Every structure is written in structure tokens, then in C-alpha cells.
Image (tube, rainbow, N blue to C red; front, side):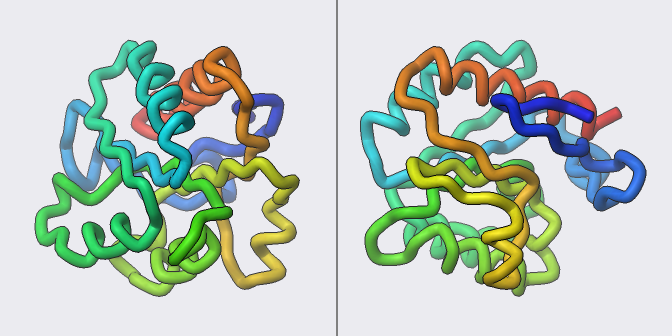
Length: 163
């Protein structure tokens, strides 16, 4: 069991977990990671935090979930669909709950691992009350060090998922 920012969760492919394997499906060397957060400062800090990955990655940042949904709907090539999503829940216009609901409705996209981050306490059980699911629900860190820890945990998750 992997610990991400103090929260245990199973890597994809682990016993009882989804068998979605982004590497096997796309045969990519660099995962595509989407960061969806309306706070510009947080996006900047996350982008800096992801620079610490040993694995090359393609990071795409969105300022709101509506923009990310529009982009998802336009994706025709599996090589540009995200392998992993970091999602803030509380955003204007389209919030993270609505984004997650749309993602889970689409059979092509529902298995993408989503890591929910929020300033407010949110658990997987709370998401379950809305009929939604995420790989993990994490408290949004207030500083770069916390975001580096999350980014490092996501890389650990990614490496475990591709094995």
C-alpha cells in the first residue's frame, strides 16, 4: 500500500484495484498529467513540484474544470488523454464534483486515476455519497514542500501502476 501525503491507497493493478494500465494502453514513456485548479499560485507551485519527478512527464495545467472538460471532449488520440489527474474540488463555474461526474460517465475516461485535493476536508466516502470516486482525497498543502510531497507520491503511484 502506497502512502500519499499520509493517505494510504492502492496502486492500479494491485489486488482488488482497477486493472487500467495507462502505460500498457498507450505505450508511452512519459505520462500525461493534468492539473486542474483555479488558484494560479497553486498551479505555479504544483508545476514547480512536478519538476522533481525522475520520470519525464507531460504536465498540462487548467485554470478551471470547464476548460479541462472541453479539452477532454476534443481529445481524439489516446496519447493526449491524461494518465493521471490532480483535481481541486472547489472552483467557480464547473466545480470538481461536476468534473468528476462527467469523467466517470464516459467509458473511455472513467478509469483515469483522479487525485482530489481540497482546502476543505473531503474523503472518498464523501465522494461516494455523490456517486463519485477518486484514487485518493488529499488535503491541499499550503506550501511548496507539501506539494513536492504530493508530486513525489504521485510519481511513486505512477511507477507502481506501470509495473
